[in-house]
Length: 410
Image (cartoon, rainbow, N blue to C red; front, side):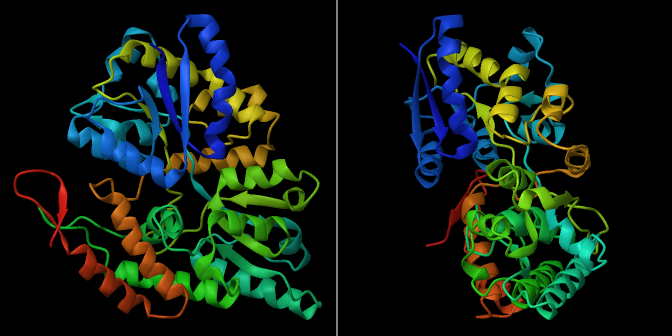
């Protein structure tokens, strides 16, 4: 009976299937791959953990991992790694540590993606503008660059572009990972209470984000996804882009002589807290506790998470933010990017942490907040009104007294 591997159907994971024949040749273990669209994948993974699974190894979003650790449905991996001499310190600890419970590791990260500020180096240099270090400076420089371009007859280049469409994987990635934390967001309330999303810090952060995109962003900012914003920047239609370093690496990889050649990245700007908040997205390998092929799944995990395979993904497939430090430090990785890119990546990893709340119904929280963010960007509501309405909806969830799960009021 083969181990069954279910991957999220996403460009960052497709390349792994090419290595599976080598794994089978080495181990004699066959692998069946089930690729699913993201929404269905999230739904199926969350619903079927704990049942006899149709898969034995999965690369899951960190919110799913956190949910399943609470539910007791994951196989412990730390002791297996120790027995086989796998150096977990080579993985970004901000991810490893969030996948621990009672000092037991339940998941091993595959990628460690963080937000950066991507910018048109040539435009800033042309007009003598400095790379912004704070959010206020980003607003000022984006507007100044946009105005200077317009004076020179370039009317189709915007100051900035960033995700605006509602959704856990859309605008909540920027807002929950980077914007809100930059203003000092503290979602935790008292024991048994739902998260706090309507507070002075979040209102100020959302008001800033909405104004930034309304003043210097595309007219359709409220509907833009990561792919849409990346496309705008790659077409030379924006001076700044807020998204992951991987998105910038993709721009360079797809068109090495295009916009990527005259662009660079910098650490994300700081807000009132003074701490850069690049956030962290760490999709991670985990094994269902109910799998009947745990040993085979573990062998596949160690193969796919090995230095060699992650290096192959970084060099051959453009997975620019691998979880292993040794991959980024390698000479082979250095051939894929310049020294400045690698320096920003190292700086970002020093600050990276999973800021989006790892709570039951974390996806639902992202959808609720995302809808509020979209409404504010579109000018349909003020930031204060949008978040007040969102808080009412979040308060429709309560922590039950008997479990750690959030349940919705009828």
